[in-house]
Length: 525
Image 1 (cartoon, one colour):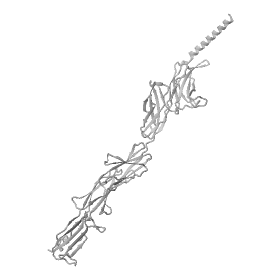
Image 2 (image 1 turned 60 degrees about the vertical axis):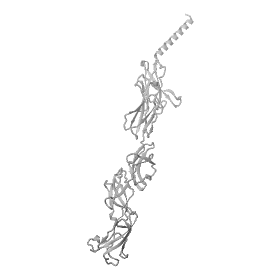
Image 3 (image 1 turned 135 degrees about the vertical axis):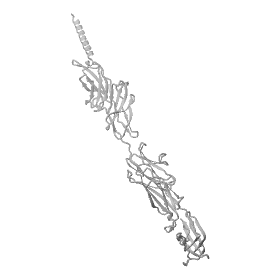
């Protein structure tokens, strides 16, 4: 055999060997693995990577790669090996690697790919391709809106299933109830959810679970939490009282305590106890809770007031009880002379209830003084003023002008330590002046009242009574309606039987001057 033929035979054998080796190698290349999901383990915040693999007989292990960011010597955003698994099963890895820093699925969406490999003799044969990239769901920190009592949640879409995502389920739990509950479900195209919390003032924990259309695969996001602050509200608002200051003015007092920092108050007014309230003023916690309403006739109308507390969202968070004025009226008794009948409305809605109504009276514009305390629910009182007829106060005859007000007093059982007082309007009753004059009397009568000649007058002023003799001489003169003529002349002797002239002058309770003259007979038999 020639040297050239031998050379060709050697080349042919070499090629056949290479072809055999390549054929054997190709036969040993593992199939490409398929990532099923990447998910965050809520118990330790590590990423769990799960995949599937065909023909496990042709796989000796796997290489898990993570996308690395901001690590020295590494191109940011490239996949680098974080774990080599020297077994074909299980097809699962929980990323606790620190080679390129720990994975932080609470800070960013972590991305993974997997490569399978086969060891042939001394060679490591890898699958032709890495798996498709899968990325964890990054759930952002919730935003609490205490106006709507809801947490707003947003997250990144799950990357890895393409259009095969069916839904996202949002779960929550609290320290008081650690069992996760579904807050809501959104479609694959949505990455946000607003959760209206059952109650504020506690910490809420959230995570999101993506599910594929088959229902067999799922991916859990990182866990986030947020403290939900309760809306600032007062401990209480109390309507202390409504009291009348003058004919057109009612003063109101309210008290409030607790968290008032973000509270605004609105004062409401209505002519009905139950409905029809309108806002008449806006009050801040820095304002005085003494409020004056000067726009109505307190003698004719009763108005009701309520104070509402609103948070900075404009929501009503508390309300006071009702305060109002007491309207007092008076009338002369049509049946009994010298009797004034008072009527008033009850004071409603004091939290401590009513202890008493105290009645005050003034006579002829004098100072007011307490005359009676009413403790039952009888909202009227009759004042007998007949005893003032002919009486003097400050050296002046009582004219018959009687004025009143009442004061309602709350009991000491108010839970907030407030004891309210409400004063009514002032009303006046003018007793009519009346008079009658006898036409005869007997100084020696056995009946005492017939022994004196005296006009019978009530509630008059500027009184003057004069008796004249037959010749026009004054024989009796008095300015006191309680003093009458006993039939004697100025010398102390009883006058003779006969007819005598008198003159009576006074001003009645309505301010009209009355002048009356006539004759009286003195009789001795």
